[in-house]
Length: 297
Ligand SMILES: [Ca+2]
Ligand SMILES: [Ca+2]
Image 1 (cartoon, rainbow, N blue to C red):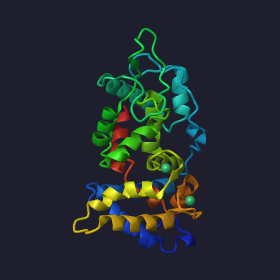
Image 2 (tube, protein in one colour):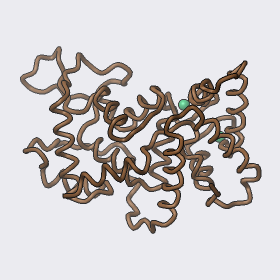
Image 3 (cartoon, protein in one colour):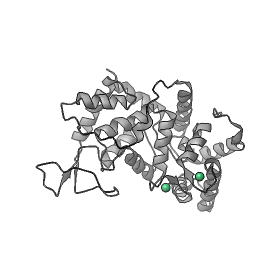
């Protein structure tokens, strides 16, 4: 795999990338798929003129979807459809198909939560009138259903901690479930995201405590398991620490000992392979194509 990032600043970059991807792909079942996906992403982001210079406002998670569109399956209110379409890379037909899939998945899962889901900060769930205050009903895909989907539909074979972080990245207002708008916007990044969108997504996944930095500790947690799978390693921790320093040198552009989003974005722009430097959190290209094909009539 050759670098499309170019750039003189990547001095020892090639060697590092090689060692990083070696570490990361060893012991990972989908290594071939991941490599193929990486190059596919690369060529795709390279060749697409990206006509959708979709507003980054999308990421200012303040937009509130008042109406969840409780109409029939596959339908949502015109206003909501317009919003979803405007802020995603999907066509109207694709969104309708996504809504149908979403409804099916929701119907197949029980979503009565005893309260704000564990691990979420102050759920912004609005109690539904007529429902006892002890049970908060929030329509959406829960962690179990979502995880199943990542695994089965998107062929994501990755660490539990990453699975969980991917869920959190989809669940934009931390209400403990992936709601319809979360679903459409998350899949938009998953399936058709620009490099910038995917960079923001991966950074969010890797920033385990959401403090806007990926620290040495976080890098250690993220890289630890990929190395542990190497057989015949006497002191895996040492190897992981070395790897952390290696990756840090590559990603910590401003040299303050931790990776900010700006660091990450700069590094990824120069070398897109670094996008998933801490583990796979985007689906393989084949899985994307298969899923997209099911959205077209
Ligand atoms: Ca962090
Ligand atoms: Ca930094």
